[in-house]
Amino acid sequence: MAAQSGFPWAPDDGSTDDWVGNGEFNNTIPRPNNGVWQTWNYSGPVSAFNGNGSVPIPCYGQASGCTAFASIGASSPIYQSCTAAAQQPYAGNAQLQSLALAALFSANGACYIQKGGVLTPPAYGTFGNASRGMFTGPMYVDLDFALEKMWRIKERYAVQFRIEAYNILNHTNLLNFSDGISDPSGGGGVLSSSNAFGFATSGLIGDGGSSNRQFQFGLKITF
Image (spheres, rainbow, N blue to C red):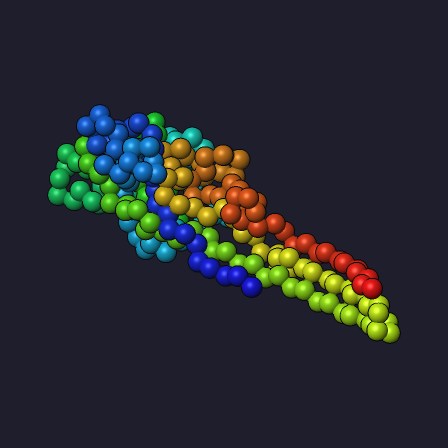
């Protein structure tokens, strides 16, 4: 039996949007992100994005795969929540609030919203507050089981029958997130998107996940 919590992960904008505006596209964290690490702003409970991975986090905006704001309307609660969250870190500064909305509505801008948590790009010229490792990825659970029976035939011979079951609970173990592989500027929000932010697209043993439930039978004769 193996059970462990998921690995820490965080929004890592590895694009060259240059929200900060210094032309360097980074904030001095060179690894593991090839020198590119641009933080976004997050508000709401951290637990809202914890354990994610089975489905993409819903997103709105112009980033690829996101639902366009125009399709939901400016009066919708989602639109209101996204624009309010984008401006909230810059309360009292009308200029930065305007730049925050400009970033939100830009080509790679997006608002990810789930369970009260909202992630938006920073205002142009600023860093966001979404720090490294602030979320926890999907947990790993694996239970293997084996049953064997031995029959002895006189003193010289023996027959052993084994039943082995792997991942007997058939728990889906997805590839764990880590900093550097979840880019909010890539968009997503739909299962068909290979860049779906907050969505594990792999779950194989070699990827760090596990296979589905499997059984193995064995018969051995010793003499």
